[in-house]
Image (cartoon, rainbow, N blue to C red; front, side):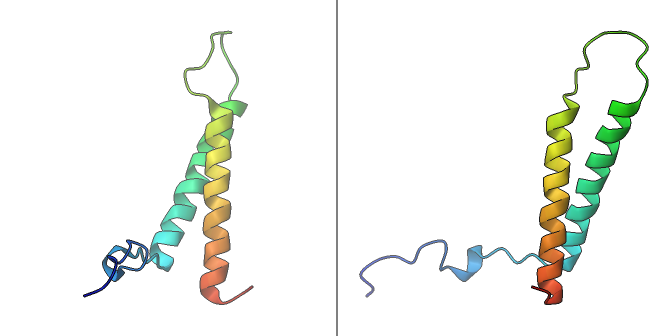
Length: 80
C-alpha cells in the first residue's frame, strides 16, 4: 500500500496531449482574433461613442495566443 496518493500531475489519465492539429487551430484562432481587432480599430468611426468591445486587450490576447502556438509548433517540429 503506497504511503500517499499519486498527484494529478503524475496520473496518466489527466495528462493533456496537445498535437499539431490543436496547435494549428489555436494559431488560426489567435490570428483571426488579432485580425478582427486590428480591422475594428482601423475602421473609420462615424461618431464619438465609446466602443463596447475593448480592442487593445483582446488584440494582446490574440497575439499572445498566436505567439504561443507558433513556438509550440516549432517545438513539435524539433526546432529549438
